[in-house]
Image: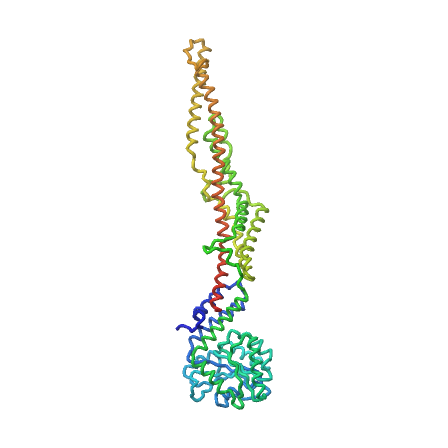
Amino acid sequence: MKLLGRKAGPPLDDRLAALAEAADLAEGRLGAAAIDRARDVVDRAGVRRSLSVEHTAVALAGATGSGKSSLFNALTGTDLAEVGVTRPTTAHAQAALWHPAGAGPLLDWLGVPLRHTVADRAASGLILLDLPDHDSIELSHRLEVDRLVGVVDLLVWVLDPQKYADAAVHERYLRPLARHRDVTVVVLNQIDRLPRRSVSRCLDDLRRLLAADGLWDVPVLGVSARTGEGVAELRAVLDKRVSRRRAWASRLAADAATAAAMLQDSAADGAGSGDHVRQDGVFADRTRTRELARALEQAAAVPVVVRAVAKAHRHRAVAATGWPVTRWMRRLRPDPLRRLRLSGGGDARTSLPAATSVQVAAVELAVRDMGAAAAAGVPEPWATSVRHAARSRTPELADALDRAVATTSLGVSRTPRWWRAAGALQWLLTAAMAAGAVWLAVLFVLDYLLLPRPPTPTLDRVPWPTVLLAGGAVAGVLVALLCRVVAWLGGRRRARKAARALRAAVEQVGNELVIAPTTAELARYGRFVERVAVAGS
């Protein structure tokens, strides 16, 4: 069955669903009192909607001596309520029913055991309750009033000329019911005790006080239970409200609005709270994001890895293109990346140095600044949750950064083609040098044995064996030097690429462990504000 709602707002079902969701979103963020109140309203609505909606529970509430019980008797046409003058006589709430069929479960839920059936009349569906005095000296009486005032469908506050301005009833009951104007009626009883010219003046003053309480448009009636003046008008107002069969829904709508206001007071809507997050969920404070990324890069030893990439490239280039006569010495040096256990794309842990205390402090400061910036537009205590969300996964940062560096492809596994070409050229030059050396050795042996020497070709005046030996050595050294220059430039280029890849990996860690929890908490708060607005509309 669809719950009724105000014409100007969303359906009551939607408001109650929004209130329930807002309470769930506020769990652990706001005070328990506001959350429990919201859930109590939702639970109570679920129970009330399952009971008779053909009956309207109307409660007469008032102070000692206000004539509440007398008015109850006047409305029912009976002497059911015992009337007292200077002391409370109503110890327990009692109900008068005009059509009792189907009202039993509702009265059981209200906890009203005293029930009386009144002769049939036009007030079909009316259940009139006479409550104990709200200012009774008996604590149990006051607790009974508080309980029933919180659950009945329609409230009729019976005041008297002597105490209608009493601060106790206004501050404790009427003012908190400012959102219950649709289900509140105020009666000034015992007007027969006033001079005729003073009645309108007292009613006007009462309306002024009610307006100050937020109840500016509630019906205010002057009544005399003793003489019967105004009783017919009050009965007509009640008949009209009961005949609509919607007082129960209006009461629940007012309760939902009040509970939503309590949640909103616990966490008022902060202007600008959504400025940090774009519609796609990306944190928009680029300054804090960059500061966090820089701190994480230092803690992850990204500069160390970038330098190692450049050195490793030059080291491997020299080992592949250096002069073969001396390149073997390069192999005796450790590879900078392998020394750090960085293979570029592997899944092993690295041997990078642990972050220093200064770097750890810089990361913690950047995370705190990120949380503070995100919480800037969010009121307390929700802002504390935003800041806590930013720090919630900080202990995981060290391991996550190390894994990110270890698994990032540094682009060093691919061997450049020119290395092979330069290496082949070096071996060719080395072969020429070796050929020249062998040739000269053969000539030396022939001279030593005084054997005839074969003719030796020359290049201009330089014998070819000498040209091959010296030329191969000089050319090999020159090629090695040229390859070193090219390797240095290549190392810088690969270092830049590795730096971009590492920064992206580090930023991803920051997004997952710092920004994402912060953004999720901001989104939770934004959803909470939206749901509270729907529940209170």
